Image (cartoon, rainbow, N blue to C red; front, top):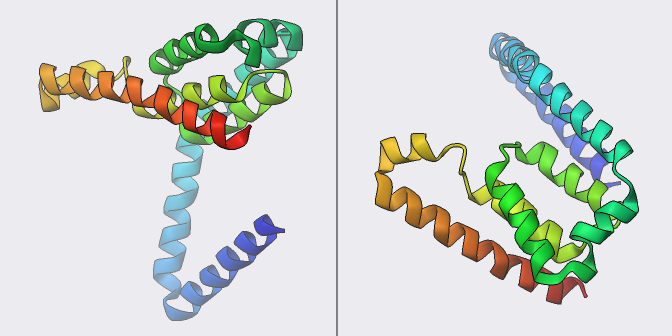
Amino acid sequence: MFEILLYAAAVSLLGLSYYKDREKTKKGLKKAWKSFLNVFPAFAGVLALTGLALSIISPDFISRFIGNSTGFLGMLTTAVIGAITLIPGFIAFPLAASLLEKGAGITQMAVFVSTLMMVGIVTMPLEIQYFGRKEALLRNAFSFLFSFIVAAVIGVVVS
């Protein structure tokens, strides 16, 4: 139901925009289409790899390595994977939901998504270039630690 409301709001606002200024709206839609075409190949590739991986990996395997019973070791595993992996948020959340359905633990997925969003091992050279070595290392270290706090809070709230 919420999705229907969001789509209705988007269509309504698009109509309002078109009513106010047709040319700007057409330009905006063209830019949006070009952005979509630029992002789509990477998006489709990651979705295909994710789907393939989830179809190959059994729920038993997932719950054995990152399930609720794995505790801190499972959290550490997913935190390291999340810190190293470079996946956009619009893919990370559906991936986490799929892993939860296959047997992953709540806290493990919380730390995975948190490190995925906040820690950037892959992007660290660029971050060092702009902010300096000390700041980049501190930011990533604090973000890594904070991810465990977030996961613990989510684990308590959801349980």
